[in-house]
Length: 98
Length: 421
Image (cartoon, rainbow over all chains, first blue to last red; front, side, top):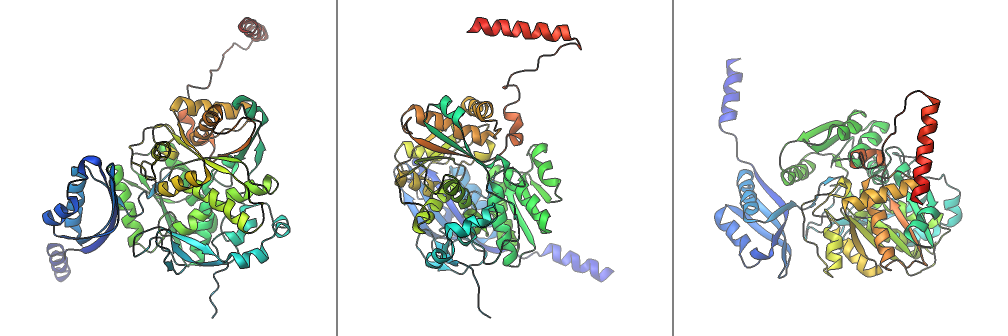
């Protein structure tokens, strides 16, 4: 019993950080077109960015991005993007249907 | 053992054309483009003739060679072949020579066109060995997955935003589905659903099963062509949420032309959206080939997708066929629902009101000429969106249990009717 509880304690205290890859669509408004958003993302957070598709006009920026790193860091990065005014969708774009 | 994929050849990326095996996968590993099923049309041409189709039961499966299953269907045997109604009274109201309603409000078993896509997705899921199916939905899709999964003993998980109205949840809970409400902002819920879909080995109908799922919509188009007497309507008006239905109606017309089942003819496909969520029709009107995301604010909840996944492809179809895109306000949606109900006895959900409302505008503006013919695709039953019309459809007149009182009510109403003439 004591051994089992010790084991649980050890697990909860040293939970290994999860590394993962996310596939996202970023859409950003005209005001952010000239901002190097993806470069800034890589500078601010320890994530690897890999652009797979992109279409940038003077009205909208649409970028398909692969993001790799620690799960918690990726989440922070997404929060920062949204704060900047970037819409962040999964690669499927809209998973919730009517 | 020989691999049997029926009449399917592969999954192909809609962006780069790379091909993939016919598994539960939906995105190109190279450019993340969506995957689509490719068929062996040469073989299908030899098997699928008008007489073969005529000899089959009146369900969507009479076109099964053009649907993405390898064997006989195992889910939703009775789905489809809904009525194509000649809508003469509505035609007069809208000012067009000939009008048809493709009436999916009576689709089996959950009264919406989603039964088509779900029965295809679940049949294919069973072929691929899945025993658990899932979806993320706020309405019709959840109902259809729950019901169709229950009917064949599949375990179902339905993910919904936690603040969804009770009425919509009951329509899924009744079938014994596992309904999981997720608290949080819509975008967070959306991303989590995508994550869940990627993590668990389930058939997520609108994620990893999407290439198969979306093909089910084609059956609506096939039925229109057959029910019209093997011809393509000059004009088809389709409501747009993700835009997928519109692209698949187009694909169905192209496939029947390719197989020689209908004569090649010029046709236009028009897209209808609600004014409170019109990214595709707005982009089309502005002549753009991309859309700008919007925050939905409309009574047409089933069309409220601000970032439509197939928006780009829907725009391409509108452009290629010379179709138009337009939108209807909440009042115009209710008016469209009432028109359809009062003229044809069809009670459609708000999406149907959008289609009728936009068709009215397109006819009035001459984009659909008054001396032409059109088909309106009506996708779901009005009982699903009662809240949208409560308080807008007249009122009950109450009387005492007295014949004299009823007669005086009738007389008063007849009198005021005469005065108003």
